[in-house]
Length: 232
Ligand code: APR
Image 1 (spheres, rainbow, N blue to C red):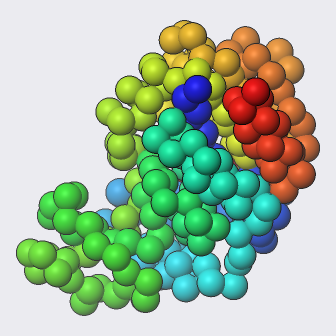
Image 2 (cartoon, rainbow, N blue to C red):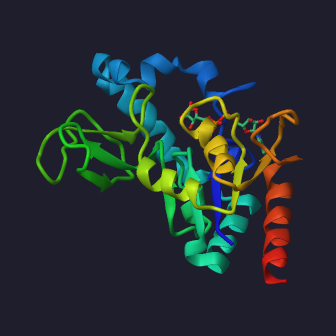
Image 3 (cartoon, protein in one colour):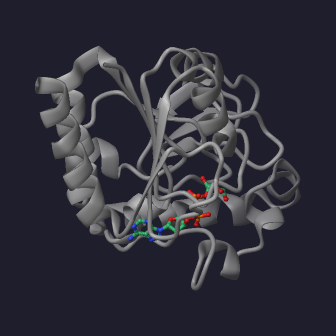
């Protein structure tokens, strides 16, 4: 039984990390075009690096929650039959024990080279205009996929969606593509699609099962029930 899970900011909300939309969302205070587009970056690199420095250096004070731990346990039990894709750039899945996390929108704890997008390196400090790529010496940039850029791991993700039995999306508003379209791909290829979210759309044609609630309550329960089901 193959399972693919997609997470969004909602899974980290109860850990204290702000989501992007809705009240007090990150995009309520920071203009997307200034800090989450290539144009904004090349217009004011220091402002953008400082924005992600704040998010990166703030990470240690936020802790993984029961939903992150439940998915890490699922990965341990299912092994290669399980794939976790996240839109999040935080490290809470990793700190909960998840080993294979596809950060399709990038990752705060890495930087990449401005010149060669394959030059990616671990980084947990404060990036400055002097920070250089350790591989070729060019200037670094945040390893974040900005609006207008192509998300990461898309070939691997497409293949997984076309070959999974279950697709579950958790804590995402499903408004940003291509992630928002993953449920259609999975369903079209025969998967059962489940939504676990604080807000649900019961009329969504691509979703077979909607479970409304807070991630720390509904995700551990769903994972436990899934494991019981496949062990029968
Ligand atoms: N439990 C479950 N779901 C929650 C919780 C919670 N405690 N709190 C909020 N949610 C849900 C909200 O109802 C909403 O549907 O999480 C979702 C968060 O939506 P967004 O803030 O839009 O975050 P996300 O869907 O991850 O955004 C996608 O947009 O700006 C880009 O790159 C950014 O990766 C991000 C992408």
